[in-house]
Length: 142
Image (cartoon, rainbow, N blue to C red):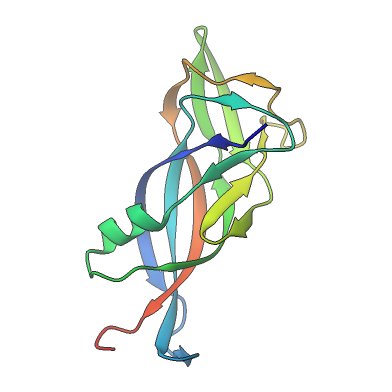
C-alpha cells in the first residue's frame, strides 16, 4: 500500500538558523520554519505512514522566487481531528526525507500507538499537526 498523502496548509515562523553561509557550488543559507499538515482522504496503512511535500507552500510563503531544498522535518505539535463526533489527537512520528517528500507514521496521543489501518475520509481538523522543517536556499543576491 502507498503512504497516505498529507496536505500542507501553511508555512510560517521562518528563521535563518545561523548568519554564516556555506558553499557547495553556490552560496546557501540554512533556514527553518513550521508547517501545518492535515490528512483528509486516503487509506492509512501502518508502516507506510503519511507523506507530505512542503516545498511549494514554503516557496509561496517566502515570496522570494527561490526553491528551497528540504533537509529534514520533525513533529513539534499534535493535531486534533473530529470523526464521528469524537475528537482525536494525532501526531507525526520520526520523519524521513526522500527528495523533499517527508514521510512519517501517525501516532495517537500516547505517542506509541500508531493510527490503525483504514480510511481517513471524513476527518474534520480542529488543529493541524505541526512540523518543524529545515531547508536550504540560495543567499539573496546570488
